[in-house]
Image (cartoon, rainbow, N blue to C red; front, side, top):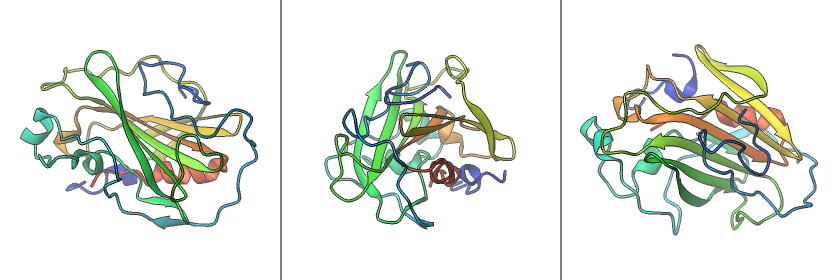
Length: 215
């Protein structure tokens, strides 16, 4: 596949404003700045390459049993970087916060917040969060749960990979179903990915979404 989330074989909208409208799709978006924060998009330059690495205080999670059986690492907290994650970010953005949001039926979203060093979920200013929505059961069901189709502008991230872009009050979200082919077998429980940017141009948030892939 040509989409960058799926190239490396070892590898390799829901309308999101400040919250997700359907919990069946993805976890609630991390609130990016307090109410009343300026909605103007910040000017940013070209994206730079970024590596997935540990974040201080992140939840210690390991790949579920089905994923380890299919080749995922069993190392504690290694699952964060084997799940789809961004490989490019605006200059100065780093991973600052990680959180696991559980949902019914064994699903959870693994959300990582990116922004300037020291930024948090209550910090005003440009930020991006990336949230794979995953069936974390010991043995996932044969059919993934996606919820109602999201609403927004439909775009193509790569061949056969289509996303929905929506925006509201300075927040831009890109949602897509994670492909079931051309990716490692240990990712068969990944249902979707949502990239949400606050106070950033639509083009920047879409570019980050295009860079998402697993390690």
